[in-house]
Length: 459
Image (tube, helix red, strand yellow):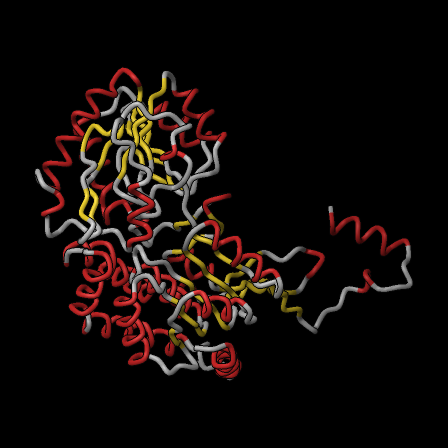
């Protein structure tokens, strides 16, 4: 799709939005119901596409993609009336007699750019929030997950006229053309490098953005933790989707006194969850493409690997791999891993952990395993991070009740549920002043009585 075609799409959507057609709640609800039914209709094709792109099993595809989209739609349908209501506020006495309120209003024409690692979830979830808030949407799924992009385009074409919601497929050329357009809001999920470019291009039009990025999310295991349970949950979170999860535990940071026991439990759990030969497990996924496959292999230090390390070129699979005796200077600690490698580092005190984490770019997630409530409060209060879990991994993003988003280098803004509705809405602050009374104190010529009155009202 060329620049002229993309420009025409944006113009058509803006004309459609300006008719007010998306403002009625009944229209938004109808759109969400239709989307939900269509996803249900094509659920098998969606799961087949996810298997082709990422090797995901049907169970994982539902648990981590389509099921979460259904949950977001259901939540939004349940709460959309309350989210869209005007909210009253107290009016200062100086403005007597008036009604003060905030009115949620859609931004207008929204661009959603999504990644390849959870290509269905991370495209559809923000779409649900944007539609609920009353916007029109241009969607740009990743070129790296083409089968999922195709089924998304099929679903959207069946559910919506293009002036309401449409999908633009393609690669960098299409991304560039889209970012040259003037959107009213941009929602981007992806790498920090591309996120910086999105923000730079958005600034040319002063377009507000939400950036959902990533980073090296630490998994801290303190000596009071239940090591067997910790290992079970760490292995689940780290190697889900072959580690290609923006909130996956990037590295293990554990008390040096329990390191050997923890590694032993992690090795057991890898075998229990993925089998003695993970590369032969049909439910174990694959790396998205050869480029990322080679990048991840380049991060493996075979001399420090204490579990795994094997791989298959033909299937783009890498075993769950654990590396010990890692320092913050090792190559694997210089970038977000985004693959099935778990480097293990140690600490001597929680104070050391806090200082180390805070010296590095703010991670998208932080995980802490401990049975000491004081330590949990200390770490979660003093460390900067987007969100996380105590004694678990990943699950904090699987709810519509709380917003999910980054902080600092890991992004800005949030979505899911009410936060998603707020993200795609502008809240107009309005004072409705009555006409039957007009206090004269603010008008010139100013007199002494005006001065006394203004001091009385504004104290």
